Image (cartoon, rainbow, N blue to C red; front, side):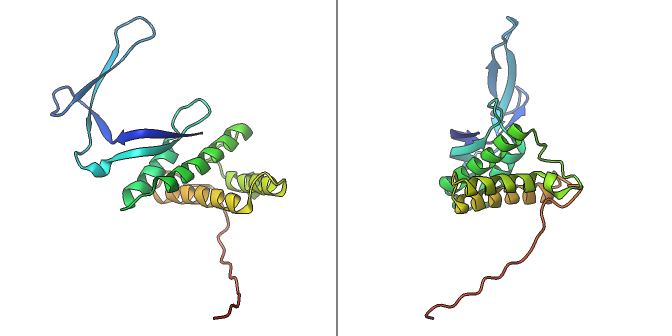
Length: 180
């Protein structure tokens, strides 16, 4: 559910007459002529190109658009991105996507019953895996942090308006003493 692209450049479709247009042909399986379109890089600026870009894909290998836009938006905001960080986020979101598909859950559906919401169901699933010894608690925590970051982005971008709260926010205080 995660794929690493060796290189990626932001492009946009355009007309054949657009300066810098590049022709792309996709062969037709029906025996008809190929499908032809034109594209060009969004910018010549290297900030719009990435090496080793992680993508989240579904079980059929199709990109999960929203998750990939989230990763790209984080990359754009990061002045010194580390591939491992974004590969980890893509892996976490890929695992979430696999869970959603396995359980036939719509990630945008937040019903009245809290325990039927995708965030609570995934949290419960991760807790079961930790209790079974299949996953470390720190890994489960990191996975939930990635999923919550994804949902926060969806909500802040106006891509998701959940009917009910995706999770309950709360503050936790940990008190400790050390030699200092």
